[in-house]
Image (cartoon, rainbow, N blue to C red; front, side):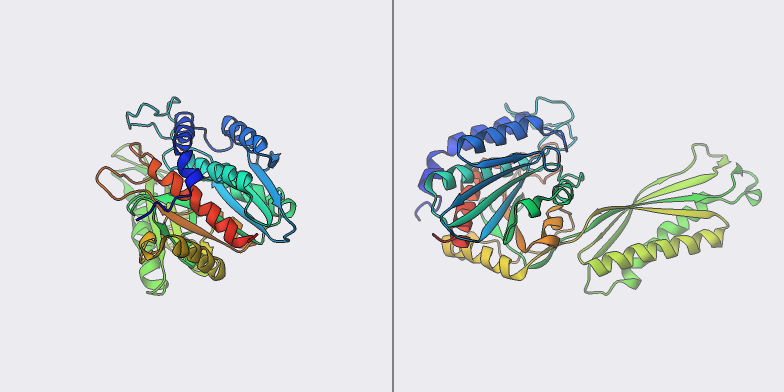
Length: 390
């Protein structure tokens, strides 16, 4: 079988790898991506892109116009790293203790820069191309901030697209899923306040520990008894903090939850039932309850038309063998969901490899698979040329 990667991209593959590894060695956390933004901006400027900096703090947008076409497309790559201490032992491992590209954003940035170079030099499209290099995907809400500061008003797009590497799938294969694709993610903190006292005289206390234990079990009934069996919901109590002595009933206890759903109505139902159950359980044990919800990312819902289009581009290019079959929704979350709330588009997956030693993202032993760089960049070129035909 002939190499499906575009020849010019294959010829520059070693440069792509070197750039990706440079980014990997110099990770920057959310809203701290100054050196990364400098690198991206310098490269786009040298290629002839109109560059806008500062959206979302450290965000960069590169714009390239060709011909007279009125359509526009946006491609997004995330740039931030995670607060993880790397343990890969690689020669290009992170040089900054406690910071690591453990999710492949170094690869995503390198892929989009390689596509930027090809599209600038070959210019086989008619319309407007916006390349969006986003900060703070890892829980910082960088997408929401860029949008709030006017990204789509300043750079309107007929459709937006993003890709993410995914270990566990064959390297270089592409996955598409219309509709709900990734879950919402909310953090909930519950404080139960009672009356502390001596552990030998519990009848003189209002015990928040016992109330917490009952509440943990009650919360597990929400998904099984309130959510439709064919829908997805997760309510996990990840921390229960109370007291520090065996013979003391503390005054208060704290529960920390992660709450996830694939649809907005299920998300709302989960949060409603958490509040209701918490107040009811607290009252039954004679303690007070405070529930605080820290909204994170909404469900990521791909638009059907744009997902079908993106899939067809990959199918025409690679055939069925180049696609990930039977892709299922993921319980992880992704702030590209904010883009898809305001603009039609698609978030797609790129297999990072499924062989031995290929660990999951957010792991101190993870590394982006450099074999995916050239296919990823080629796909972006194919997508732009199909969306903005010359």
